[in-house]
Length: 388
Image (cartoon, rainbow, N blue to C red; front, side, top):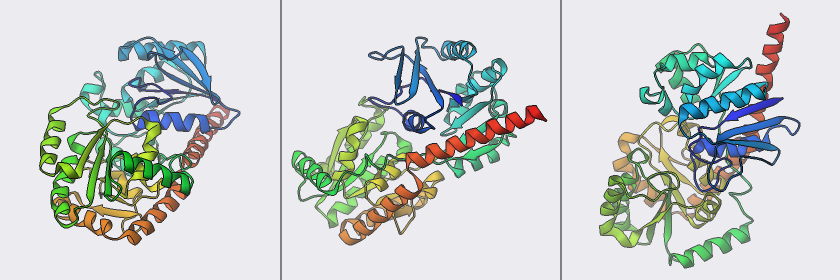
């Protein structure tokens, strides 16, 4: 099979210094598709990257055009010169109508959220038009499939496939993990602290302000607590926005209990999970999935998160972590942090269960296998349709 994946073009692929779940998914799924397939990833050119290269059996073609319209036309020109059996658009619904109009192969839309179904991102198209032009849609959760059906009523078949986590990279050998944790604890001078980790973008929907306010309450009863805030206002950026300044004001009275780490290279993140005792992701918006929770679970860490969106499909409350309804976050987040901070045996039990779930249900190998099976069925249906 010859398949082309069209990246949004916002960040380099394979992922380097930053990127969203979209670039993370492309970087991890494409190399794990069947070895006898021809897999091409189209993206934009970034400094330091070649116009064309092959890594791990995946050919990356990087186009110069920077404007989205020009980028799409450049992708189409390439695909017309080099035909493929299937083309998948990653999280850019506005690309689909023109691709479907100009290409003869099936055009799939892989959606990670509804962000790019908003009017300003659709370039004059309606959401229904973009969705209905796709031959098939793949979502990263059952929740997102339900949302698309309820909100837009598309006639296009929708197939949920959960994203994954690198279960090898996010779980080093125990002794190595202990050495890494000791080294980082020494660096941050937190050897005797209970480390609460937040990892993600510093934007209101992630609920970081609620975590910091909960820390105000929790440290009164457990002074060993330390909250590490890893991430920036944008992927790969430490620009100090109004919201980031608000977070720092909230943290100032408990500055001994909060550290703003900033953005971290993706390859270094496993070390920070190794350092943590528990991970908190208090999202107040409808997260479609939540890769941070999967990374925490793969790292053997208990998760405190919100019972919203696709998070409910990944975190098993009471087993691999604690889920809190958004309306109860202000009341229940601090007690939940205290519950886990004071019970190492509970943390260990939840961490072990999370690791078991990550290995069994959320490895990238499993995700890539489900994608490949879906592609094969779609192509077989097309062949049968022509024969009929």
